[in-house]
Image (tube, rainbow, N blue to C red; front, side, top):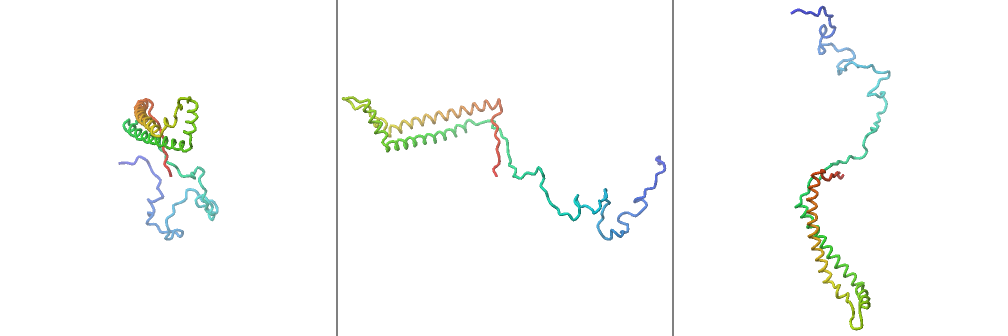
Length: 192
């Protein structure tokens, strides 16, 4: 095969001289580590890392650095509410609300009775509705504690049934509407 490039100048590198491991160390490199040649010459006085040699290294914070810890956040979408679980939870919550209603009515009746509200208001109503032959309307016997508790319990039972049914119906309606618009989006943040 013939070389068609013509005469080539002789390369003055490794081809004619010793390899780097075979060279004799010069006076500046006696036994020390190898330092490759610098691409840019050092300015007078020399620099180290962009600072003049001998200057004290001071660390300045970055301009865009965060000083507060970052809080992780996640955006979630409530795509479906299970009607069975909504019914169970609403049933238990409405039972708790019904019990609170009965207890609150009993406490309120006892406080009002201890203050003498029924006696005072009952006497006024008896005088206003009474005549010579009858004593009038007796508020104290009409608003006795057992009667108030029975009435409050009936209202609490009706409330339990209605709240459970409405919450379950609300879950069905939410599932239908979430199919069209995608549901409610929530942003949750991690507490530190």
